[in-house]
Amino acid sequence: TQLLEQSPQFLSIQEGENLTVYCNSSSVFSSLQWYRQEPGEGPVLLVTVVTGGEVKKLKRLTFQFGDARKDSSLHITAAQPGDTGLYLCAGAYDMRFGAGTRLTVKP
Amino acid sequence: DAGITQSPRHKVTETGTPVTLRCHQTENHRYMYWYRQDPGHGLRLIHYSYGVKDTDKGEVSDGYSVSRSKTEDFLLTLESATSSQTSVYFCAISEKGVSYGYTFGSGTRLTVV
Image (cartoon, rainbow over all chains, first blue to last red):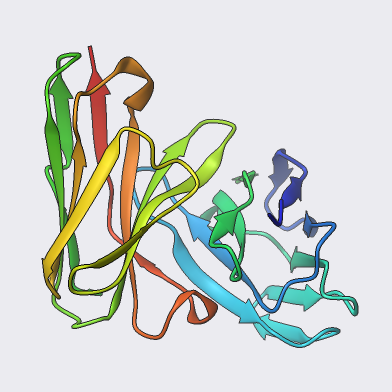
């Protein structure tokens, strides 16, 4: 069983600030996914990372997979209110999700 | 739209009654999944299907059964609903399996009173 721990659990920032959220495990992942979920909706896939050390960029979002493939981070540059939501990481191997980071970006 | 719909969107039922939730897809994806989402627990896998009539249990399968008689439909049944099954239920689909990510439905909010 690969448990995923996400931190912080809650994050409230002002528009324009930068932030990083984390997803950690004691086990190695073959791949890891990040999702964003808005209230009343299902999660939406943002990215899949596969290779240790991999960095992927999606506009202002930068995703990094740790060299040992046990951890991942999501960095948002110049956060906007539209980034508000619950950010979830998921390990592909056993279909488990972390509990998520709830981000609020205030205008 | 991704072509996945869940019904009903909201349901209130009484303890001890059977309940069936439906997931319908128009993508012809092989894999389908049922998750429940609760505060502090994130998404937890209930059951999944890797083809018609091929299903398997997930992390929290007790008290739930599933059926998939057609590619497009995946049904989740609560045999005898309990208050602990009050939750938001999400269906997800995947064309090639979990490594390639899921597309989720909009969820069913179930309240057992």
